[in-house]
Amino acid sequence: MHAAILHYGTIFHWFAMQARKILWGGEKMVRMPKFVISVCVLVISLVISFVPVAQAAKPVRIGFGMALTGGLALAGRAAVLAMKIWRDDVNKRGGLLGRKVELVYYDD
View 1 (cartoon, rainbow, N blue to C red):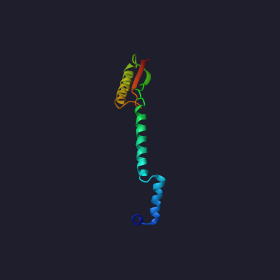
View 2 (tube, one colour):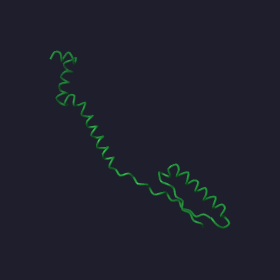
View 3 (cartoon, helix red, strand yellow):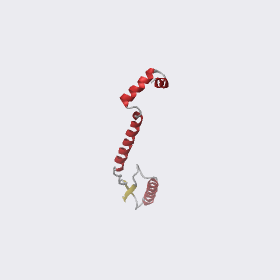
View 4 (spheres, rainbow, N blue to C red):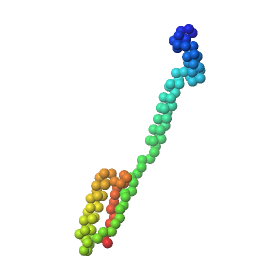
């Protein structure tokens, strides 16, 4: 007992260590959080693995009327061409909020 008292430094520290062993299980106190964390990680991994993968979202449809025939056809075709170039550029970059862009237009 004297060696234990000398090893820990003070008798108060020795009593505190004995109380810790009795109340909290001594060395098990260090291992318990690792076990709990491991179980939590395992449970979370299993839950995430069963979450269904989101299906492809519907495209964003942009509709408009444009003069494609008649006196304003030249300007209308240029505007449609510009919209198609924009659509292709946006779709190449991943779309709007992850959704592809689709143009729906008619000749007014």
